Length: 359
Image (cartoon, rainbow, N blue to C red):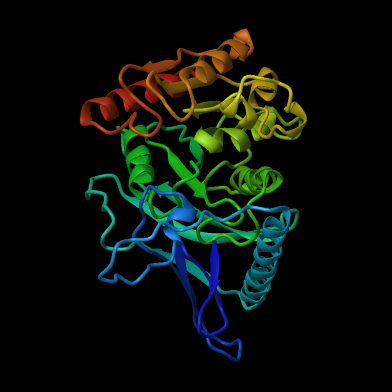
């Protein structure tokens, strides 16, 4: 969700994008800060509810909003209008060679200082297909001579879940980077966080292809090595992750695929009936049969958002030569697989084993 501020700039409700470009278009110091507003694990609609003033009387139940085709159409037009403004601002920034830096809100959890040095960089990638600029964070290990780290370093391309963004994922990216000895690249989908554009299924596909090609051709990340990129998709991120791992243009460049709390398809989360198959989105169950890389499924046995049967079905659909040991986590739900220290350690152990088996 995006909103227009007093200066006519369009900012995100999830990540405040503070442009250091003056009103006449000249850059003040060549930087744009991506500042993270305190993130909660709630949906975007929860984050933008208006605050009502408290009055000394009995609360009156609000009439539920009637969602009509006209209401949805008006909302879509508003989103497109705001996305166009963001796109034009980002386009001007790119023309002026504006750079970016990520500033984490101090109220969010900070990673502990460790011996492994990590460089975090922020950029925005132009995605012409979705007509947007995609916010991307890269976490790169600098200790090239550290004997405890893998010599053939891989890069993990992380597609996050629906109710989060780059700022909220910062701690996990640091943990994966240090725990696995890999570089990590994460991005916000069109219409999310600090990215421009409109949130649509087809845009997520275009977004991940843009980021994947950036990693593949970047010497410090993929370096055009078909075994060096590990694709990781959590929840809704399993959709674009299955897409890039099965697409004929990129599947032979993917070294491995990990799906965390994935679903067979969007409609199958709501109903097993195929009566509405023509309206389905993210057909992971079909695409996963076309992957050509080692594939691992992680799913909580008590997942109430996406039943564990989705994880079982996806694991069974993986080509036999690509199957790797899944992890079906006892007493875990959709978002708490890594909540305890014990589970986090087990999580890292299993991912390390998977990465070692990618060779």
